[in-house]
Length: 351
Image (tube, rainbow, N blue to C red):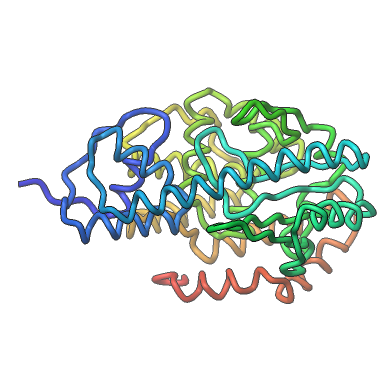
């Protein structure tokens, strides 16, 4: 008799949004499926998992229907907020970009992330939200979070004035704006956002410098890029933005995870790296994956340290300034430290 697969592999297979995969033998007990529901919700793929179960005629416990309705309620409220902001910003002459919020598959984010082109528009933007019933939830580094309560749900809007992780600035706002496009999303809304190629580069940077892991939605985003032969275009953006290290590691690791968890083996499309730091990081990841395979995948601590080192060194060279070093030294005071503590707590072997 075939061995039952672990919950992570089961969820990654069932929630996969681009094709129907062969599902290995899994435990059909209610306890197993409830754990799968909780795992998929924690990892932000529950709507995909729910739909995947329907397509595969996997009958979930009753709580799944209730949970899915809650997600749909939040999704509807988020779409109404996006539509309101598009009109309000147009009337108020506020340039706004939606980042991290939309993906090339069904995705209901925890919050709506917006980037303002001009920091001076923050007060006016907050007023727009307050007129819609939003109130200040928290002030972070450097974003502001506003929340509105709805019957049975809520909507959070994270308002960014720079593309940063804590104190570390990643992208120049004007450069981001030059690359932005209008994309049609659900309900026919035309939304200003980053093109898919740039979004993968942003995802690469966030995975290494903020989340310290490749999430399941990030793995699916990488899969979309592989399936659509977008790697050369992504690499051009990565080189233009000086994010070659992060992007190569992200795509290479996602490629390995796709083979492990999705049994997919797409052509990678990039030459072997020549840079010694990239080679070192890849070796560390390969050694780690040989010891343990997990989804979501947390990078080894030394790889994260290398990512911060390479990012700071690259910024110093390109900007001819020591300001990136000052940003790095201030980083422990930012809100991202709680992610680092959580990472250290859960990492099975820090080194």
